[in-house]
Image 1 (cartoon, helix red, strand yellow):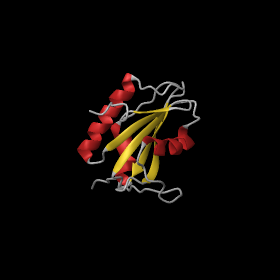
Image 2 (tube, helix red, strand yellow):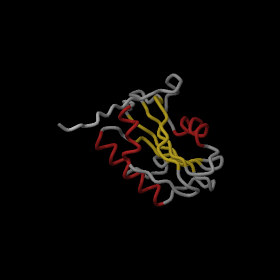
Image 3 (cartoon, helix red, strand yellow):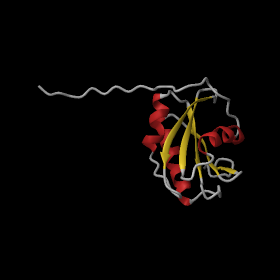
Length: 144
């Protein structure tokens, strides 16, 4: 007889009610700055949205180094799937203060968008925070 481990997953909500409804990048920036605005290393979070684009949860995807962070679609979508997210928005900070995207930022965004399309949880935007400013990759025209 083989002993096979049984795996049980559950989502635990730490606190709060559903937060604001998202309709533009500025709606997201204040929430994101409260989580990662003053960090000295790159942090990426995902805002999990319900069907009405209300923030249903915030998931820390990655904590990196001064100028990089390793991101893989499985880490982005794990909480989104378990949290029944209808869509998500990625946000990460640039500790340098310059919110302009790197080539790696653009590539990660493309991969996450493709994965989201495949599993049915679209990536609505990827926002990069800098010192007192931000860049929305969707508004910047990085969406094809």
